[in-house]
Amino acid sequence: MDEKDMKRYMKGTTTVGIVCSDGVVVGADSRATMDTFIASTEARKVWSIDSNLAMTIAGAVGDAQEIIRILKIQNEIYKMNESRPMSPKSAATLLSIILQENKMMPFYVQLIVAGVDDDNKGYVYNLDALGGFTEEKFTSTGSGSLTALGYLEETYKPTLTIKDGIKVAARALSIAMRRDSATGNNITVASITKANGYVEYTGKELEKATAQK
Image (tube, rainbow, N blue to C red; front, side, top):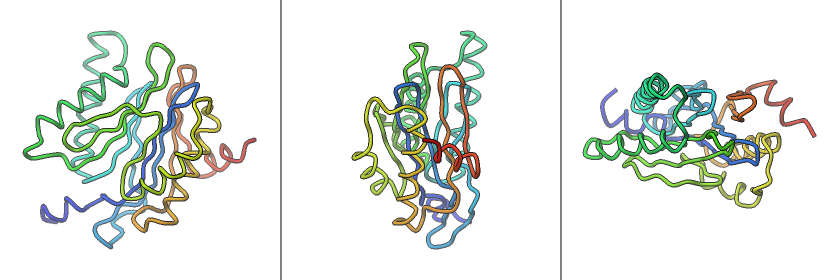
């Protein structure tokens, strides 16, 4: 696989991040593509960094995996020095600096960093490949993001709970899967709250969570 192929690999995807009244929810599909070829149906795009912190990835798989490794290592160093994990804003700021410093040979990624801070509030940040980042109440990345964002725009409310946020995230991803050929296969949704930390839902667990009234 040459550099041109690597730049295309796994660009087709949809990830979402939602701030809820009691935490945050993130989610993604599991299809990795290389042009029209489906390279994998089990690509992991939702990652736990710590009990209070998660990220989603879109872009070149090698670049995304390196960013995950960097953030996990930096979080462990931070915990040794501060006796607590990094805050969502600190993690987003660190990644913004790393991406900006490498803009001449950029990481081909689009990231969502989400988590809960000491104030018990949820935070979601959207980062581009050059290090630009914005704080959002809801966001989406990848080739199916426009479709997902349309649904999120209509559905999002500041009073949305984690329970409902899981359903909204799953629904947004399902809609993107129907309209974007590079988004597909399985859905993974994760919630983060101060009380329960990072909890991931896939398969039957996700079906059960989205079926609850």
